Image (cartoon, rainbow, N blue to C red):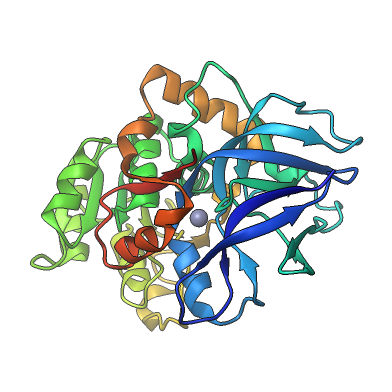
Length: 353
Ligand SMILES: [Zn+2]
């Protein structure tokens, strides 16, 4: 039986998002109908809103939590009434798995296709993007696990595999950056150096385990990181992906010594919007590593329960990371505006109903 729900959509580029009715059919074999509880508002969605590359209309949002309303007949990992995390990272595919099938929705009398979306009161989602969430865990704070946490904590644990005592620097300490810091803290990294442009954000970063902070408006972060680490960090994460910050993270990691060890690792987590020029001195001398991290190189089926355990133990304070809460879709355009203007200190979310 079809249901009517409300969602935020890009209908016309340059216009505010439309908040309008969409119609969802019953789940197909490998789909799950989810009533959303909460959804994060992620920076990468701003790129989507401004990119002019998505087809219109498009649904948005890719991290959230909800309650399972109905499941398709091939779905066995969640059932009606379960709590779940909605994420854009497939939960247990292999290299041979086929591309995830899109789901369908009806808008103003026409049928369209969608991938993941969470800026909606209910959503029809491919079962690969729905991960069970225990009912004894708060379902609002965990709304950011499906992107901010998996991207940030995953970059440290899954992509970089940081070990106890290794030095870490993070450029850009917004929603993803504070998750990188928290992940580095759980991994036992030391020092953990946070770099950003406002003292407010840097003070906030300390609450998640940053041992040192650098305000790049008045201090050269590369020089300062070399000083603090006595020669360069083992790992430097770029949570921005900018033309300035990518060369900075590469320059911030230590050089190796020929015959003894390789250099440090620069990890690009933020999504670059343009090509980036790297200085010729960067390679191959020093044997530095430059790697990308998408979705924290993680497998949600294995990794999300670990994040939830750390949250339970208080090591991963997701609730503290959420600094702005909007009441539902009617405030989504204000949420997008505030994120664009840099007014969000940690992560902002919408809570439905
Ligand atoms: Zn995201």
